[in-house]
Image (cartoon, rainbow, N blue to C red):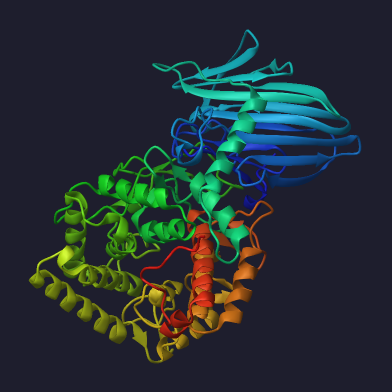
Length: 609
């Protein structure tokens, strides 16, 4: 069968890797070990790239949910013969709780079938394909387990039904009767120089993993508006965190297209500095303080000692810099939409917004960071100096245009943010002459943006200097404190962006963007709230929050005409946008002074008890 819609998928995570399970009970994506590792199930991107399905034999309907406050998935199949529940989990290490979840995850995928009523014939199809579908494993029966070994990977499957091995796959049929369980445990390990894969008891592992997730949730007491949506999004962001380093990946998939049949397919299983401030603000909003500190520590180690060379704009989860892109020609792509890429050549780009993202994050966390250690002090000084010197240079922008550079307004604004925060740090970061130099550059950037970023004819700030092209990225201006949201020009910009780029509340990034970019619509929520249009802001937030799939998950983009989710999935940026928009709405409702300021606060007390 071919992959269904992106929104058909559920997301499993162990804070090191992720799996996607569709609504038919098929695991069509799993890259064990780490998010950007080669897949062992890859049918998401090609029908021949491996899957593991457990489903009823006949017709059925489906209802799904996560077990409360976890990323453990429960799928209930209803058939003419009865009902069956399938529970899926990527396991935590036994006893892992709170902020220790994911530190030593055993690389185990657990599936449990429970008969709820009647007698339901079930079918299992196990078809691993290693290294993105390149390699067919030998299947060997050993004791009560089935081993799949090829190249550098080994999978061990233990289950309570008899599997019949064939040519690179195995099948089974059984009957799920009311009150009975059939369990499946699949462990991964490298073929060489590693212990054999773990295959723990399924019931105990599922219960322990649920307890681990709930313990993490219990340590994060968000008390702002829209708590259910924020808690779910915070769980998703935590699931996309590589716990050994603390890095949050942009997504857990590669090459899910922005447009079916298009070629804008990219690998998002990496960490972008561009997302850094947004991510930290979302973690802070949702009371994830330990995660905030780990994120900043990770960035400092990943960047290393920064001098005059350009700062890399993205990294691997352990801080790797060389993310050279490769095309996987053996894969046909999601719904026949090639190319499939691993790596991402955006790592070579200049993106001037990263100065502001990092400095804003440091300002946000200043109470935790001060007094600065030598590494942080050096990093922030160099970034401020690079912003002062480099803001006049064109760049690829936050949307990562390839092969061309422009003077993007949002990049200039983020350079202003970097310099503004450096000035606010004052003598904690530099000598008086340094602060004066940063202040002069900050004021120069601001004057240039207000002059060359504004288009009098269309009455809006535009995507780049001296342009008439609208771009939703300018909505960050009041969110970072560059302009008040109720500034006449900012109000006019919001109107223009809504009129030209919005459809039913969903904002495209630019005119001609193939689909709406979810976080842009959440930026609009923040702008409306800060401009005093609170009712509209709440209405839009609720409408956007209703665009998630049945499990509360967002992709990167949504087709505004069909509602179909597009792009890599789930997308951290989209969930981060929801958390931050809920935070702005909370701030505005609770703080009359903020309503009169018209910009998001540069520092705030998190919404918790």
